[in-house]
Image (cartoon, rainbow, N blue to C red; front, side):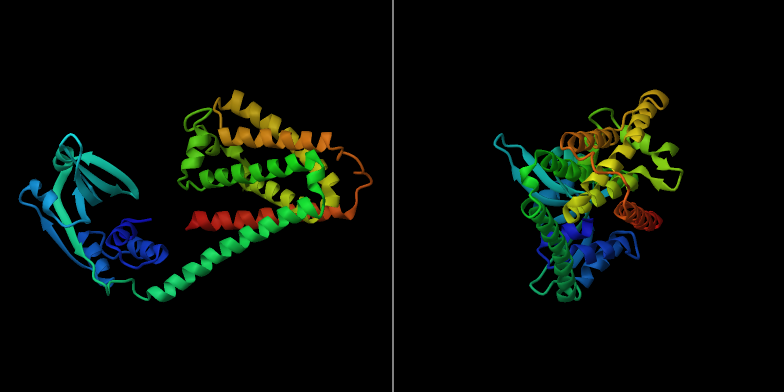
Amino acid sequence: MTLLSDFLKQLGVAHTESYSDKAFNTMSFKSLFGFSRLLDSYGVESEAVKLPDKKLYTELPRPYLAQVKSCFVIVTDIRKEYDGSETVDFLHFGQQKKWKLEDFERKATGVVLLAKATKDSREPEYAKHHFFDVVEKGKLWVLVLCALFLVVSGFVIDRFWSNLSTIFLTLVNFAGIAVTWLLILKTLKIKSKSADRICGVLQEHGCDHVLEQKASTFFGIFSWSEVGITYFSISTLILFLFPGEIHYLALLNGCCLPFTVWSIWYQKYRIKTWCTLCVTTQGLLWLQFFCYLFGGWWSDIFPLRLSLFMMVAAYGATLMAVNRVMNFIKSR
């Protein structure tokens, strides 16, 4: 969310985050004047003023924008605490914060933007934008329902529930998808609280340092995060759609294990930095191995059949697609 989306939400103006965020990011004039013009397109009247006395903050109709140092915050409320002191509640980059009134007055510049919404205030072509937003959210729900259907069918029809190894294997695969997705976000430098929290477990900023190394890519072509999410995603699909090929999944997992040894050695002895997400991925690959081993799935592998090469082709095609999408995002 952007400052515009947050402010419109506080004003109670009908809007969509996608359109409002795009409008804010492509604003012609990166100033209070440009922001005021944007509000005008939503039917919101606004006025920028310079307060002659900072004590007037408490008398202004809320919400309003207030300049604090070099940025603007959305003041949502000013209230009295039980001890008689006054507290300013405000939004800063989408996060709710509060300061004592005297601290706020000391750091604020006195520049504010007052805004007033009416019952007719709304986003331009809001109905159309809202429809497409609903459709986009619908796509996500369809994806979730399809994934749930695959999981349920795998456990019921293919009797995964009757074998502990396949139950644990399913859990490991889902964990692998989640961990490698966080690695993808780190590779793309997309802010993620979950990724930052996990990465700080073994070493602060360790993931960032490791992912900046040349060794974090496969011959400089694919990042290991791309390889990881491709591996766990396709392995999960094959497990549910073609459970009879689980023996070849075990073989492919075995081919990955030498990489885990090299990765741990490289982090410990070469760069002396630990990437928690990377180490977790290596651990999940070994958990997969033990699931295949104790489940008795390392049998009936030879002679090699055509289905193995079809699986390899599926991994390769998906990896190419993921890489193209990643490069497209980076270029943007």
